[in-house]
Amino acid sequence: MMSSAATLLAFQYLTLGLARFSGGEFRARRDLVKAHGELLLSRELLARASRLAERQRISRELHDLLGHDLTAMNLDLEVAGHLTQGKAQEHVRRAQEINRKLLGDVREVVSTLRGDEIIDLRQTMERFCTTITRPTIHLAFPSDLDMDDPLRAQTMLRCAQEIITNSIRHADATNLWLEFTREGDHVALRAHDDGCGTSRVRAGSGLTGMRDRLRELGGSVHFTSQSMHGFQVDIHLPLLEPAP
Image (cartoon, rainbow, N blue to C red; front, top):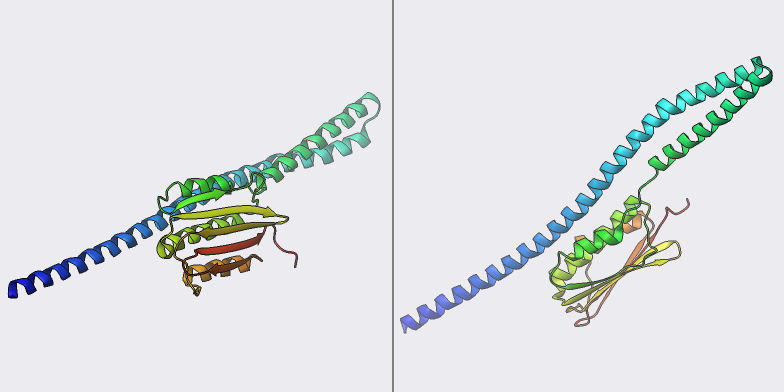
């Protein structure tokens, strides 16, 4: 009798230990997925920041060296134009035209270099989704969606990452659909999974952070769910900063 009780107790401890191990393994997997996503996004943004820093350095040098010299030369040529006559004056005028063209070209190059680089949101999302084994992520992305504002592109990436993390953590979903669309001057993201869902949506820190992040940029998010019918997220974000 004592042997049977001891065996039963040992079995219960083993079951509890396995459950704890399974739960720990799940949390470790979840945290690993999230950390890997953070790494991918951070690497993308760091690479972009490095490119922008180099472009801005070159633009400053062009502006400071060539821009100032060409402007000074243009003033000298104007003075020379008033002091010369005949063929010499014609050569001065031609030099003025060339100088003005060069100055315009330099300003155009400087403006281009200082402009924000388009973030390839689709490519970044595709790379991130390939690291997820469950749920299977079905990504839909239009070819005409380019986001010039790095902050807004980063916000959409963070929101998509939070949706994926939430699906892994809570939904026990087999599939997750992420559909990006462009609606006029807005970008939209509709996400839904085939997980367990919930009869009452409670926004934790992740979903609350998503809402706050979008609200700061004039965007919005709406959560809907039903028990055993999955979880859905609808996001809308202006592509440009709203007028004051």
